[in-house]
Amino acid sequence: MKYLVTGAAGFIGMHVSAALLDRGDQVVGFDNLNPYYAVQLKRDRLERLMPRAGFRFEQGDLADLSRLSKLFDAEQFDVVINLAAQAGVRYSLTNPHAYVESNLVGVVNILEACRHHQVGHLVYASSSSVYGSNTEMPFSIHHNVDHPLSLYAATKKSNELMAHTYSHLFQLPTTGLRFFTVYGPWGRPDMAMWLFTKAILAGEPIDVFNNGLMRRDFTYIDDIVQGVIRVADRIPEANPDWSSDHPDPGTSRGPFKIYNIGNNQPVELMALIESLERELGQSAVKNFLPMQAGDVPATYADIDDLIRDVGFQPTTAITEGVRRFVEWYRAYHHV
Image (tube, rainbow, N blue to C red; front, side, top):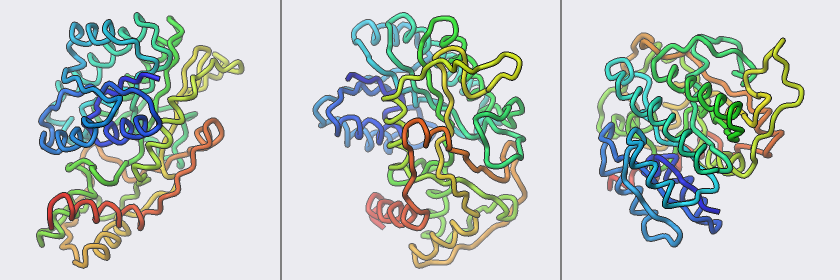
């Protein structure tokens, strides 16, 4: 099988590409190497993929339709896994246009390219942030998600809506994955795990929002990769029981599906900090702050559909995941 993995220099993209190569698939990685965080980290991730047989890298931007069209013309992709995006809830408060270019224009270009080149399946990254002001837990794909609390969340909800129209109009099989707080080796420097580890080792205070009363469904990268690949292997079908009288947001009359992909075991933020303190052998200096605009107090994934359809089962406990991350972090930074 030949895959296009966009965002291949990103955290999830690198790991997904490596897993596909491990089983003998061909992967074309695509990434614009934007400077939202250190480009060197992205290059270091790519260095782990570049020597691999079956891997080729193309640098480009999804918003560049001409560049993307030439790539699709030159290749015959069986499956496209779109993990490229402008990430970050807080960054979207001050840089909204970056999200429009990457998460809206870029996704329309991917949809058009898949449509016109007979791609067999488009899998794309959504986010748990689409649940916005929902408070019913655990979050279910069958819940309405019309009240996002950040522009980032709104663009991810838009991705799902755009994908649905292409599944409905052109019978393009699409599957959206709502990721829940992914962490692990080679993770993002703007995420809590990295920020906390860096600050604790330096003896600097960590910002603990909502006075520590936060819960996140932290999901280890290996579990995420297992889920992404299993979903990519399962082409969605129309739901014969879908009713316009009582529309199910997670399915459709077309080949369209949405899944939550999380650990199904939310962790208190203070428990995460305690795990990091144990692994690092240092106590954190905590700077307690109120909730930030656009943030939510808790995330908790209902993954029943993913378990039923592809046998997804996360197995990495937070204590083990933290240990692996800290081990990698020390090695990568020589600390």
